[in-house]
Image 1: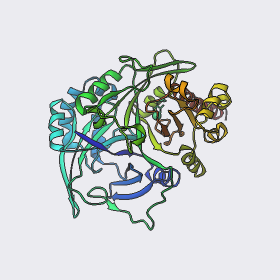
Image 2: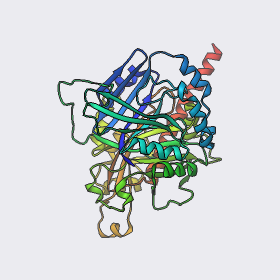
Image 3: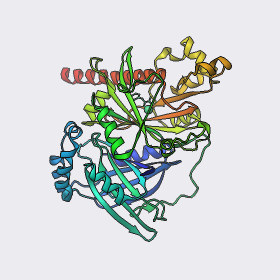
Image 4: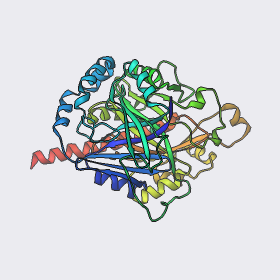
Length: 439
Ligand SMILES: O=C(O)C(=O)Cc1ccc(O)cc1
Ligand SMILES: [Fe+2]
């Protein structure tokens, strides 16, 4: 019953600062706002990628109550049936200062809501209730002079992640009732090869939770398994281990066309489905970025969002020039013979890619490779440094040339780049503490 992904919502401690980064550094456009004495909700877009940045302006008694009542992510993951009953009881004390959303209970900045447009909110609500899915806000109507929307908010099985389900078909305004349109002198600056949509959303999950999460999304939302790579195992997912990497990846998607078996030529897809990737760390592989996320975020949640661009070189250069910081791949990455060859075969310049830290991975098809010497299917990616003050959420730029999944080479390199950055941060912190103790 999901029609499409509508927006991704964040709750941030310092909204002003993050909003200015989204506009000035990431080149998103502020297009709608809702400001009350309790909360600020700002909507930004770039192509069809929409973020709502929520900021609390005052702490209310209800919030304190919620904080006490909310349980940790392990409990909520382990038993969502019990959670439902608990939430039924809590429902009345859930404050609605954020329209179309609920406020997460942990104090840190977080990306906590993925909103989907649905055909029939009442119907979705009924079926989800029957599945025992915790309902945070039952179907609710909001209207203004441009019409009305119906929405409901449900709690997912992953940490603090919620889903707003909304029917906007009876609404003709700019964004949503309650939000005012932001007037712009020009129609925004639309550059060629810009970010067009959300490509994927990656969850950081505790070890061994992936099967349960997959079951939940299949049962509640009808998501289907998406195989990331041809070397992937059905039950264990895509396990990447060794050379300092210890990661299990499993992905799902909701795209309707894929469910009825329609296969569009990959290059003709204007806006393919947004994939959901579950990332788990492996046991006995040392400290790593997934565990760091779980620690600093106080539980499972959205670790990063992949923004699709049709020209990653241009996009990353523009963003870098406006101050976005990307993590750097290992120094040897672009000079390694095999990688250099791969980049050249894909028709790119290793030096150009190295300027922004862009990684390239080929999806090699044995037959195809024999026929031509050029790579026809590859993908390029680059990760930003964490965007909040905690080492939690970050953004990614991704350009796909035929490749639909994720390549092992890129994942390993991305993993190492993030890890090197985090280790460096930790060293800085340790020496800072040492200095403080000495003085
Ligand atoms: O490759 C991607 O874009 C992924 O989304 C896979 C991934 C997931 C988690 C990590 O910490 C690193 C890489
Ligand atoms: Fe990613």
